[in-house]
Length: 439
Image (cartoon, rainbow, N blue to C red; front, side, top):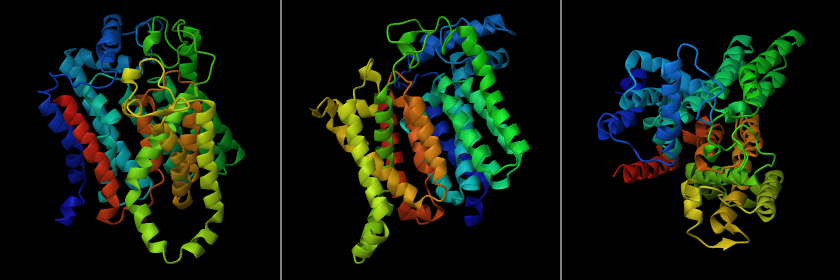
């Protein structure tokens, strides 16, 4: 029995099960699953795919209605030539992309981060069924293809870290370049790749090749930005564009930074981290109760760091109150929960709790993380990139917050079934939410 559970076939079936059940529930994807921003499918993505299809083999990549870079739409335009452009067929391609994403996350956790097979499978399923990964799996959306390419890039960069061979690094840079050609926001991965190269202690020639690959990864999107005279295509709708100027043309990036997206990211990190690692935290508190004084003495620097991080969260909210901005009704689960509770100095109590808590969660997790610089560089560069996103919508940040938390997991953190209780709670809550949408 254990041998069968350890088989790749078991993993493949387990990862496929949520998708198969949902496809059946949606009558072969002929029924539309209502999700946040689901209207983008009909308003922007399908028209762009059909426009590209009519212009194949060389469609106009400068003038089109979607606000994202064109790789996803181009891919589905070519695939549709073979499969047909019926909506359910295009949605099925999205399901296959999301299934590939599930495999990529599993392999990253199991092979690269050293987590046991069953624990990696459980964590992957919790990630896959999270609302802003699972929902877009059944609609024609760009999110999961970009996310797949980001995860592949991290997996290849981790392989490079382990072997110091340039081959995996070059594949990682290629994946980053493709991710940016799918969604501009994936550009935060460029400094992540550069950090891997700089920390690898390569000789001068290898370092030059590695950094040159990072530059080349940015080049195709850079050419598009030059052609567009901005960060989004000419004709893209600024109403759905986080990089567009408020009230301005779709081709110009706004000149102001937005702290609200950063605050939303930190709040999301706190929520997922607190639930995911609650069993480990409670167990550690119970074990150390008798030796609390000695533990505090040995961890005083980390305690000060946690207090300082929480204080920075409070300061951030004082300077920039957490507000959802345009489209508040569709900004996401946290914003909808926040508006139902009282506000203090412009920010809901939800954010007054979660943003400072994120600092504590991050310090606690970094203290035990076997590879501290990976979550620091990944989340740090993502937060810097998030400053440029005008629309603080949860779909933009949720999957990356979950990934950052998964990057801190140690093998011993999830060695026993009870240690996965937090992941189970997240998965059950996500499934209940998906069922509520479907019904």
